[in-house]
Length: 332
Image (cartoon, rainbow, N blue to C red):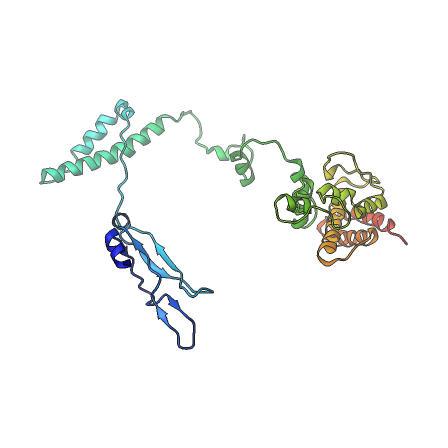
């Protein structure tokens, strides 16, 4: 019945050349059978006559995976498109005439084909190049590449990508994050925290990746703002540092420093505080360990000491001042 259906549909089996059997019961004395096959029709065989079938490594299934590769050896010729504007060019007739008389074949058919081929080459490329050259405005003066002109800025790949990118308003949040003297993961973290794209429970619940959006420390939705500024641990930490929390929506870079710290150093301090709050949250969610404001601030001091070597020598003293201030906020 199966073979009759294959013959009725006119199907052709792709031969499997690297394996004789495709199924095994995996016993000590195995049963080996060829169960898996690939069939194609005549239309497929006409378009892709060199298609092949090979086997892959079997991992878990009793069946051997088969991979059909579609290929063809039929050459494809390029299309020749005549442009009427070529005939208006003053050198078109002379170029075609020279190509027409430049070859000779005894056979009339071969001679015609050879002449048409040369005309195609001359018309398709030579006249096109002439058209491109005529579109260039020539001036008297020294030949110079635009990229080497002293009146243009020095070339760099960043400017090239910027010129190709669509015009968009500057993302100040990403600029602040990438300017931090901190590890790359901290830069990415602060940017995601500022645009509320971290994997908080509210975001995971919105994506149907969490059963609830409730915070692990209090009965409130765990949004980015709640986690970093409204939760009990966050409010205690910022209160200990005497940092006021603005009302409404705001950027993390708008937090006011409690003392006249260097602005770049204070942004690193904000990143360290947010990172410590995030680590404390993860320790509570995944390990059931609750942290206090003191333990959170101690982690901030440890991170600032670790990141100190990323600063230039002249900028390390302002960072030490910020770290000393955080240490002074700990309970004795």
